[in-house]
Image (cartoon, rainbow, N blue to C red; front, side, top):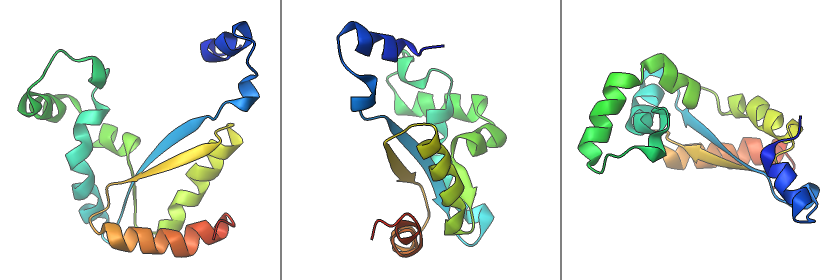
Length: 130
């Protein structure tokens, strides 16, 4: 099966292999799992089905809708909660194997500076990017 986007590239005489394929990987990292999860809750609204097509303009209403519709389990499916920064390696590798050319890391970690330091030291080295 050919993805509709790919069909559009062929129709426009554009090679789909020449186009960047970008993924966003959402993660919350901290030694304490509960604190990492707590930090991710701010982003609960992005897990609402069809979130960006809602006819709601008041962020308080969106937040309330998210609390009603997005369970903790569903949020954990959207944002990976980790206690070891190395836990990001496998998902990033899966994106690369799936053909993505870039993976943007969206961290919701309670200590962003620490996440960046650990990610830079351990993960960038793993991928040979430092």
